[in-house]
Structure formats: structure tokens, C-alpha cells
Amino acid sequence: MGLITVVDLVARPGFENLDSVQAQALIDDASALVRLAADPLLDAVEAPDTHPAIVAVMVTMIRRGFSNPMGHQSENLGDYAYTAGTGGGVATLYLTARERKIVRRAAGKLGAGTVTLEGDLPDQLSDTYYGTGTEGLLGS
Picture: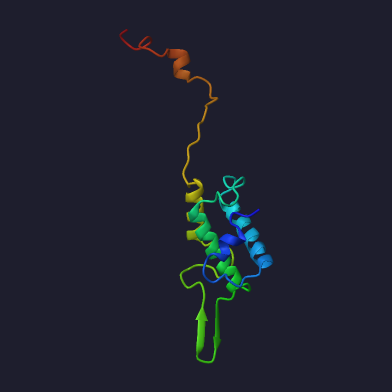
């Protein structure tokens, strides 16, 4: 199952005539890429429980995959010229850096975290030979 459904996708403008088999294939591919970006936090999530920001990212990804399956950057035909991905993005189904950040934030997987460390080092030599208090100091 995907993070969105074909019904969710067809409800967006530009997908009215999309073949349901192609739509499901694009949804499955985009879902796999989004899950990989937020691994393992979205493994158990299915539509309709997907965060709205992730749905928006997936629709954008699928739109790119549907309108430009070959991943062309630009095309020219006489006076006509079209360029895709001019904002530093990609012209294929893959997530852009900005989309990856949105997905990770919506899934709760931020870049910083904490780790509890335990030390297995032996006691300090100064603690062993001189004590931990004031004993052993000059004048005591």
C-alpha cells in the first residue's frame, strides 16, 4: 500500500486523465522513496493516515514522474523552449533536498538527537592513590 491513494491523487488538478495502473505504480515508487527518507518512522503508515505535508510532497514528486518520466532537463522545438528543475531541483520522481527536509520534519526525524553514553573506564589514578577528598593534600 502507498502513503496516498489513487483517489487522493486524481483529486488534484492535472491528474484527471491518469491511468489508474500508472498512478498506482507512481504512488508505490514515491512511497518507497519517501519511506526511505524517513526510515523507519513511516514503515507502518498507510493512507489516509499520512501527514498532509508528506501528501503534498508526494503529489509534487508524482507530477514530475508523470509529466517527465525520462527526466529531461530541457527541450527546444523552434521558438518553443521548456526547462525543468531550474530551482536546483530534479526533473524526476526522486525527492529534492527541500522535499527530503519536509518529509523528515513531518515524520519527526530531525537531524539532531541525543545519545546516552556510559563510561567503562577505570577509576582515575589520582582517586586511587590520593583519595577523593582533602586527605593527602599538603598541610592536612
